[in-house]
Length: 459
Image 1 (cartoon, rainbow, N blue to C red):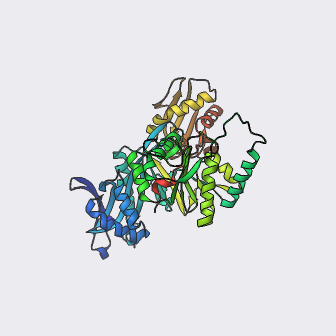
Image 2: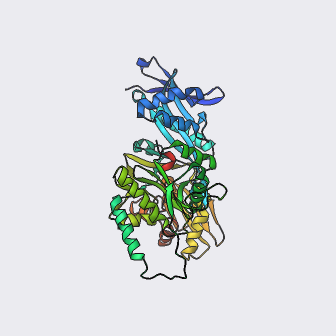
Image 3: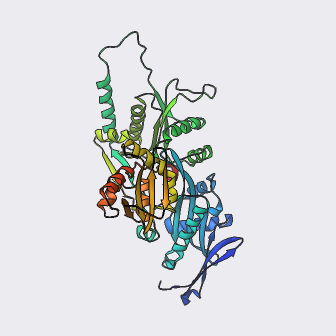
């Protein structure tokens, strides 16, 4: 369609701000498109629109969206031509773990414009309103999965992470596990030492949710990208049935009761079609992971006999086990045609949140403190000053040793999506002196970021 926007303005509609786009093509009789927040009454029309565009979500998945404990109808942005929905975006607010802190983040989901109304500025307006909504709700950054990379890059979005996973045969894993058991068996046993009782691995029960929450929380600190889940979020996730099975490893009697507590559950694994979405343990025993894997692989062989895929952060020891079993570790920017993109709304705000992490890296590398590093971000000068006790940012000057880059690249460095060394190699980061270059390589390192697939997996 070759029409153009003749008018775009902001109005107040039912107490809320709305964007109005007047289409210039006479075929639409100068139709007026209104972009505003959604209402509960829009839900049936939104579902029909998403089905027409994506053939997803299913009615079950859509109902699950509405049951999300943090969901409000206003979390959707809709574009309407009269009463017809021709565009949509949904914002999902979450906290993610980033080392030892939590960052408020907004996820953009199911953003689309009807094909016959594209290139009219409707998608750009939807995105602007979604970003505004995230900022109003306190998000420090936005994240989305999309195949339309160029569109979002023009709006200031950039690559925000990679997909890390390993794939191998379940039979190869079983063979390796059994070989390891044989090699580790002692030639003699001490009759005075009571042998360690074997673990029991079985399907979980809904009353054991507390144990899964405990193990997940134990493993949360120090991760980069894991979703911080509340009790209500856990209930919602587990009731969605977007997975196939949850296995638990029990150190003690196989049958647990509420009275005896569920602390005997020392590990769990969530699986779908041979894909290990999440595997967590309390680290109390070395046989937790092997026993969980043995049960998973045995069931996969019996039921589907498909390859086993493990989703976990880069550097997770389980990836090494998968490679030992003849598998392959894959780090991909594009999976299923989609790329993870992110946009930090104010990089200096993020810098203030993570500056203590930069300070820790400087001290671990024995950098003489205090130390200063100038930052020239999209033409504006700042100074990052690190002291033995703190770190601060000041505006207005960069000093002799400084780094020059765009705000987008700086955001990627702060998030650990890429390292300073990678950015320099790509000519996206320039250091004025050797001192600035060396300090940049210490402060800005690639991090093992990982967004758990369970949280947005469809049924």
